[in-house]
Length: 171
Ligand code: SF4
Image (cartoon, rainbow, N blue to C red; front, side, top):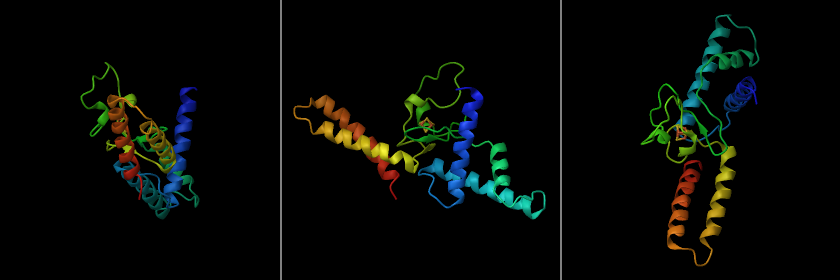
């Protein structure tokens, strides 16, 4: 996929998320989701101001979408969660804690992501079925007879993380 195609795909997903939030739908859980909601509310406010001062005339969502395109919203869409880490301010990024960051690397270390514990993590409604499936798989593994204690402890730890995600994302 070209860089432009990736950019376009990201903007489409961001616009879908914005529209869902504007319709009052839940776009996700966690502090990252809260920051996204604030950014979206600010865009709606700006659009309202532009219309009120006759700097924008469109009655539909084109004004909001134009503003969204021009606003820097930090988000990386993922299968298990979305990451809202701001590359210029990685405060709270769990993946960077105690990590050896490769020279020249910018942004999060996705393969060290901690969806259950990071303030930048967004668990969106579409992520939950994946986490629930993972929970079921881990439960089944634990039911296996004769599981070595080390393996059992590892699965228990994984299950605790999955539990945490599901609890945080369950109203
Ligand atoms: S831990 Fe995950 S959500 Fe948090 S900053 Fe790193 S990649 Fe993003």
